[in-house]
Image (cartoon, rainbow over all chains, first blue to last red):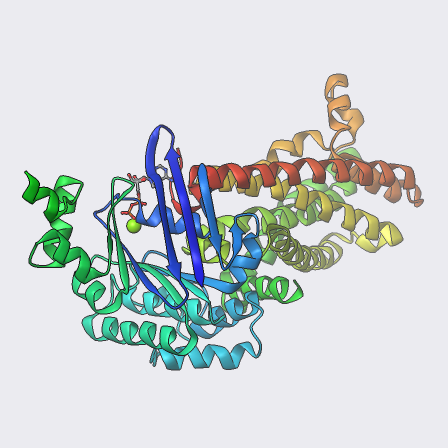
Length: 251
Length: 261
Ligand SMILES: Nc1ncnc2c1ncn2[C@@H]1O[C@H](COP(=O)(O)OP(=O)(O)O)[C@@H](O)[C@H]1O
Ligand SMILES: [Mg+2]
């Protein structure tokens, strides 16, 4: 079953297109990586999937529901975390997780908040103000928030960007566990190609708003005849495209 | 729906639990305002030998009810921007009308606290008793709240559109209308052209109503009715404006960026 289906999605900001007619789908329980250089359109795509930014053309279906037509039914069943977004800095850890658990109408909000904190091994005092935490700690809490409603689809924008390697590894383990135990679909962006190879069932490379490569990380690498996914990334970032090795041979 | 509204009311209340400065903002600053105008009033009373100036104190207390309600609704989006919480909120299933309702409830709580505090101070310091307004206090208070929410919606929409750059609007917008709405003086004190203009604001009728109650004791229900209808019109207008702004902001991607074009 497909959890996310995107068809011919376009977004222009003024005259400049940020996303140029991309189409893709994610199966239930799939971890899909959205990759590509800065400004490729990854964040804009995720924001359109969440209805934060409206799209100009194309369609988005999440869990069989149209976005943004069924915005609130969808939002109730998905969640989002990003290294660039924080929980309210003027609330404590306990307060903000309680508020978000209530916002998602989670049963037994206090209990659920403790569960997600334990799951991410957050051992900070619940009375700590979020504004006083380090960037990495905030990111981790934001991921806690994103798990509160047991989302069927989880959108993560560079979730491991400010985490230390130890915590980043824990986050990856949790994401794998979510997929295995609950069949959660995860769409996420990252600039760490090793992480992508470890985690992603499939990856989509974007450049200047268009899809330039797609497949399993191994497929993409093998097809490109390059040594590593890092090299693939660099090639795409510099050339704005990835020629198939077949094309190269023809030349 | 109830769970989401409760969540947001708590979200704003938790802040007060800790912050003495915010509690001070609720009581202390309005009290300073009352002191200044209170002494001005006392002085004018000596000079003019008239009791009419006492009505100014009522004006201060009622104006603050409007101001608090406006602030609670108008500042909510801005507060979320300050603490980097906007995206989390807009990807949660809360509906805009629930968000607005929760800020309106917070506005009600804030206005009640301020009005009670000021009412007591006005009585203790200047022997001005708000209770002289009697039953009229209920419609006066209610209508001011409603109109405060309407103006707050307008402010909120501007802040959504222009981002933190529009911060000062949250403070300025109420004072843009203050000269015309007969807070401290009757409409008849305005030049004729402005008198007509003053009629379109619901709170003009509220402040006129207040003076008429203090004067004669009877509740001017007709004036209250006009104010109520006007408030409905304003709520429709600013509510639509808010909804359209939200759509516009989504199309421009402004929800996700701190600075605006
Ligand atoms: N709200 C916005 N207004 C104007 N341009 C935007 C806005 N959001 C993103 N962009 C532009 O769209 C392009 C894609 O940005 P983004 O999706 O953030 O890229 P990525 O996440 O892949 O680094 C960039 O050129 C960026 O400047
Ligand atoms: Mg990005």
